[in-house]
Amino acid sequence: MAELNSEPLQFAAAVSAITLISGRKLSRNFAYYRSEKIPAEMVFRNELLLLCHRIRMEMFGMHNLMENPEKRCSPFLVAVAGEINDCFEELHRKLLFFDTSVITEIIPEIDSQRSFWKHYTDELFYSENLNLILETRLPDAIKEIESGIRKLPVSAQC
Image (tube, rainbow, N blue to C red):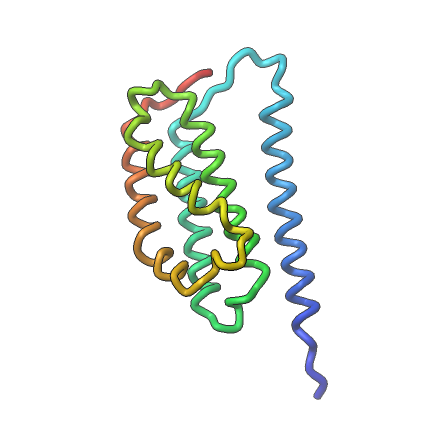
């Protein structure tokens, strides 16, 4: 029986995933920057908690990819890490709508995560150490961020 060469299939799947992620980012940016007629934007605490949930799910998926030796070099890792990076960027932008006094505890941890994830295009980013960080440090950071978000008012307006 003939075997299918999985490399082209994996490449096609990775291109599809990156296209989807890029499309989501473009859609988000378009919605954000086209809002000339709307005088003020509202940000809700639940939106921020959903972003944290999305980050948690993406980190879980990335951890599972890194646990599998065959998938360790997968282009999906870069796509997933890019999605995590974008979520932290969006979380930071939306948090700035809230009063400074209520976000001072959360912002340093988010900035730390943004500094870490912005290197997702660097090949050395995907070392053995990343899997350990995904298991230990990042879940605690997300819990801390979620805890701070739960203390925020229900909504904020720009």
